[in-house]
Amino acid sequence: MIQCFVKKEYEAPFGLTQMPRLFSVSRTDEKASAHPRVMHAHDDLVEIVLVRGGESRYFVGGTPYEARRGDLFIFNSRVVHDEPSGPDRPVATSSLALGGLAVPGLRENTLIAEDSCPVCRLTEPQTVRLEHLYDVLYNELTEGNDDGAHHLLLAILTLVQQFRATAAEGSTHSGNAFAQRIKDYIDKHFADEFSLQQMADALHVSPYYLAHICKEVTGYSPLQYVLRRRIGEAQTLLITTDLPVTRIASQVGYDNPSHFNAQFSKAVGMAPRTFRKEYVFHK
Image (cartoon, rainbow, N blue to C red; front, top):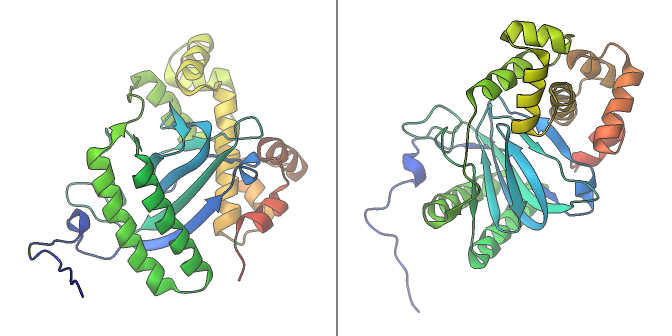
C-alpha cells in the first residue's frame, strides 16, 4: 500500500472562509447548441463554462472571444455575456453556476478580478481532467446527491485556480469607455420602451455615432443588443422561476405575448414553453 498525505500547510482554495453554494450544472452537446443561451447576466451567481468541442464566439462584457475546445470562461456576477452558438457554429459545453462565493479582495460572487481576461486556454490533459469532474458533478446532481455535488464543486474550483495560474489567456481584453456607457444604459433600461434617438439624447451623442460604436464593439446594433438582452432575461426567468410566459413577456418589455413568442422563437429556435421544458432537468 502507498499512502499519500495532504500537505500540512494546506489552505482552503481561494482562502475561502465559507462554503460556496452550487446552483446548477448543465451539459450541452453540439446539437443542442442550435438553441443558444442568449445575452444575459446573473445578479448573484458566478458561471464557469468549459468548451468541450466545436467553435463559436462568445461576447463577455461586450468584448468578443473565440471559443473552442479547452477554453475555460468565467462570468462574474452582473457581467453580461452572450453565447451565440447555432447550427452554423455548434459548440459543446459543460457549465456550472454557484453563489455565496467570497474570495478575499474581490466583491461577493466574483471569481476573478474585474479587469482580468475572462477566458484561458487549457492544455488537452487539463481539459480532460476538468471535463471528467464536470461529468461526475452532473451525474451526482441528477441522482439527487447534493452533498456530494457540493464537495465536487470545491474540487473544480481548486483546479480552475491552478489551471488559470498557468494557462495562456484568450484574446486581449480591450475596453471602450463610451461603449461601456452604451451597455450600461441598455442593461438598465432594456425592458423599457425607447427609440434610438431617445437613447442618443440620453447619452448626449448622435444616433449615428451611438450605432457605430455599439456595432463596432459588441457586434450588434443598439436595438439588436436590446432584443438579445430581453430574450436572454426571458430565458433566465423561464429557467429559474415558475412565472407564466405572459408575465415574463411583460417583465422583459413585451406587451404583446404573440410578438414576444415570435421574437423568442426567432432568437432561440423554439417557443418559450418548449425552451422551459427542454432546458430544465426534471427528476
